[in-house]
Image (cartoon, rainbow, N blue to C red; front, side):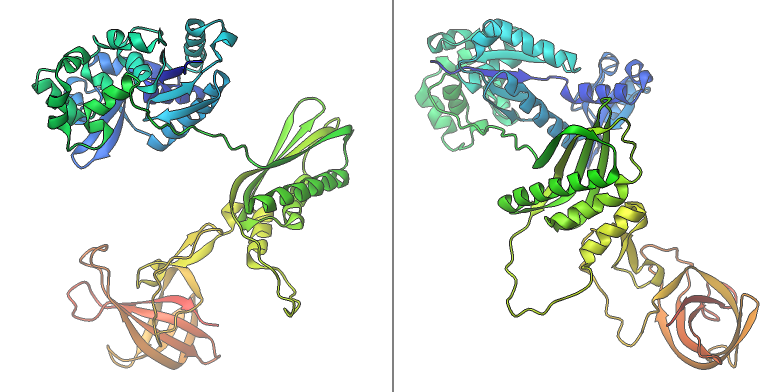
Length: 515
């Protein structure tokens, strides 16, 4: 049985995906606007793709956006989503495996599909290619297909041959491929330009040149994209081309189909516990831990309930996983009953097994990751955060909030004896200070209408402005740790110095409190 490789080329993949996304968002006006997808470069935005209206106005891929807008000022520029395009192309390659045993992504616009021995299931090769193009057209993607006995020939025919070309006879490949341009060899732009300058514009011209001459000319080019002889041998089936199939790894999941629908939350919690135990065993076998879980509950009337939970760290503790869903089960509407439940690991990370020590002492309490998971489940992820240090000496910029599962920053400052208070005001509040001399320690201050006598004071800690981020008129700060007559400790600072040339008399502010 001869090998059959199908090349699927999506010439307008990026713009087709953007148009489909706009239609799903309900943006009906996008179809009537000239849209281009651009990527920022050192020389300004460059066009990656253009819709039909933009192409009619003169926009082309590879053109600078500024040059295109000289021809069509009404162009609407949108950023290209390269990562999203690649993920979508991988999903489409997996979907194409309905016509063959394996597939792979080739570049940014192509899919290679092995259909050896499966064409008869779809009424022959030509009918199968038509069904493939029709199926992707229903998804909103323009597709050109070709079938050949090797990857190189299939790619060349899909890009530069006739529509739905089928050629499985390797002896007929030279005559079929000869009229195609040298760009069908899948060579880079530099090699293509060199062949054009040598007068070799088609594959026929290349095959007419003595091979010894070409070997001497390209003997130093080791990559396939830079050596037309390697590509020619692959296209004619003389050299094997290694391929990397795309393997679909379904997520770990556990499922229960119930004989009788359940209505009570207590029974549903027991089902979730059983699902968590099954999932924990699967995770242990894979040496992984769950980071994000999806619980799907199907009601008798066909509606589905979705509950998502994200963990602060990988875990496969069945009790912990099931407890995260307990509070969310109280508010669900079971309708006439739930007859199916599925728990799926959406995101997993490696998690090795650790043996407990026999002489380890018994510990009580809750670990930090488990505590974070419970707080996020009860309060919501947007209301739980952690502080990590940031590279700045300004107190209000020295830390930033990140998600509870974020990694701590590596940059940390050692302030030595300059102790910083644990509680800072969101914004420093102005105070009135009485001091002995303009540069002396403060003696009394008024804050929020109350007068405080200062019993002890220590400082100053001088913090200069960040000249690379702030304006040149920003003044320096002198921070003091003070204690009033009642033993309450504050953190105040003087903003500016007398005669610094950056304003009038210094101002005083209260910034934080010590325990």
